[in-house]
Image (tube, rainbow, N blue to C red):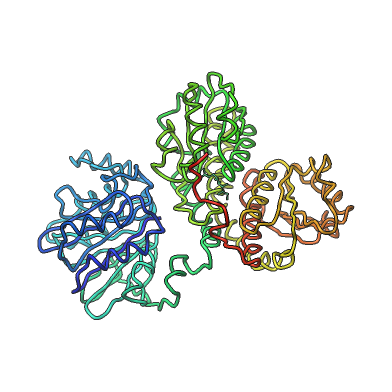
Length: 611
Ligand code: F6R
């Protein structure tokens, strides 16, 4: 989720590139950089932090140029520091490259390049690509030929833009799984960008590249090719959205955009990590800690809010498949309650932002008590990521909407990957492992299917818009989903909602049920389905208004529930992802209908860095 912009033409490139970067800053903001072609040189300026820091640095020594590329970074490989900022350069400084995405075979390519004598100055996968272009650039050939040769060896997702003083006044751009578009400027100028926001100040005419395409941009125009070298024609589209909606990808709110991004974010958290044949996973962030993980006798997860809910699903999975005892603790309680942390305890901190004060304090507490520490974190290089011994990144991109959506489902998948890792090294069979891997592989497509329920759920929200209370009930893997559904509703629509284990209801909350109480039942067909059907009957008998989230036709529920939301079926642990999505949509639409500020709900902050 970095931002890329490129310009070649007759005007000064710097202000155009900086303007594009500012419009892309919502995509990532831990460092920014620019490469300008002036005469026979490539001049590069990079700064940690926001684009305004880069702007200040450029003002000190301005560079006149009419061709350049620029980048604002959201770290995926390596900490957010200066050497890891983009552009990344060839050793002789003649090629500069900016990249958005994740190169899966970067480690193998790095080893190959090191054997050729290349030295690396960053931890990024991007530097591998620029050095590979350098290696493959044959004498008397063009930059685009070298780029295409390198990309044929690259596996993974990328949107890139490259410039070189060896073949100047041109940009080569390419895409595979990470968008890169061309902006058709006025006569004599062409732009490129990771989305339309990057180019919109100069043009509304854009050309979307397809995966496996590359393009050559020169002042005289542009040409598009397939990686095989064949020239291909790509159509010009007119951008009709205003800037704000371009940043939101055409969605009305970031929350909705992030809900709809989930098929992609789930692909990202799994990318390059699944081993289909072995029914296992490859997790770079924990690979070197096999010994510590083999000695783990108990896992204590610490987290807050939505991340705590993800931890509960993780607890159920790890206990079921890896047979490791797990406790999930509110970080804010854990830090003050003198917990017993015996030898062999692993502290697993879960955090989207990586900056939550309570989770960080709990982590320090566990460290002090001698526990090994692990993170499941979205923000690369964040404080929690830096303070844990090892971990798994989510690669979900920045989450802008205050209510966490895509990070939650990525946490569930990251915890599934960790369960596979721990399970397969304990008592989980290859067959079981393969079953989970297969279910993971089809999960993004199933989430796409769930997203098609959007209109149906908007109608449902309209129906319940005046409700003052909501109850969410689920059992097993669906209990944490009930908690998460209730939290989403309260935080964005300000309707009081409670999540409860469905069977616990009769020990108290059942007193609340009357014809004015909507009850959302999570009732996919899993091992506790028949039990949940009984709980539904208990509510029906008291005139509660029931919405059931099911995973098939659920004939047992005909006549017993008022509304049914049907999601596709998968293995029970991953049903938690599929049943979460309609609850996110329900909360979103309720909030919009009630006129609430969806992306910045009152009293809430995205990152809670105070106690
Ligand atoms: C709810 C929400 C919060 C966070 C919590 C922890 O939608 O976003 O409950 O989950 O503040 O934040 P992180 O995961 O950044 O540690």
